[in-house]
Image 1 (cartoon, helix red, strand yellow):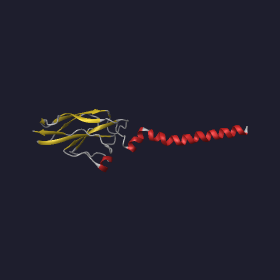
Image 2 (image 1 turned 60 degrees about the vertical axis):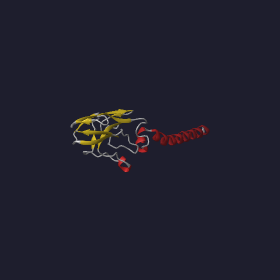
Image 3 (image 1 turned 135 degrees about the vertical axis):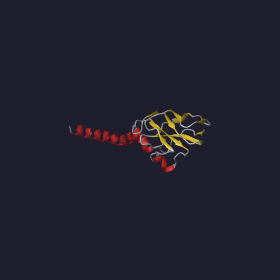
Image 4 (image 1 turned 45 degrees about the vertical axis):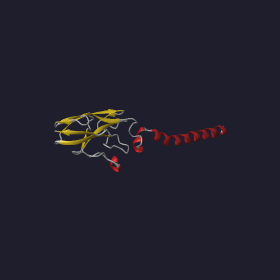
Length: 158
């Protein structure tokens, strides 16, 4: 009887050790951990793009910017579903770099949030050349250290 109890105790210790080892491994494989790790926050191959206006287009203000997205779902701001984000339109401003990639994208005349999950937005700009570019943000408007950016589009507003 004592021998059986000792054997059961050893088995229990072994199972406990496996459980303790498995816990950190499971945490690393958890999709929520990807946001902390950040290198894999956005799915591989995902990219936003501007459907219209086309690069080099001449437009009248106001005009509609239509966006597209490959390899990622669109969700409104605050919706933290895995493999989703929402567009932010950068107007006449460079994409954030460095530490700014870990902060919420500002909301101003140069940073238009499509935080409702919309894929188009009406924009009013003064006459002249303008550059448009999309950057994806997560549920909290954060682009992360490996941002998803569209190709920039240069337009002329007449």
